[in-house]
Image (cartoon, rainbow, N blue to C red; front, side, top):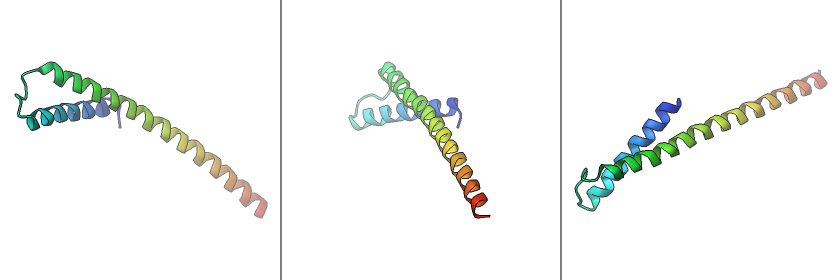
Length: 80
């Protein structure tokens, strides 16, 4: 998943959450657009962090996979 997709998806979710919260409180939904912007920025930051986290985790998994394949090759070499 690309950075733009992750950040924009989380930002849209933040705006949705803010609008839902205002709807629950029966307040005007779009009277204060700065609060929607703040929610979008906050959730977009979370999306950016999650994208980096997924990249780091995938890199760690690939490293572990390579190590396991090397150990398997050594074990097959010894067994043969």
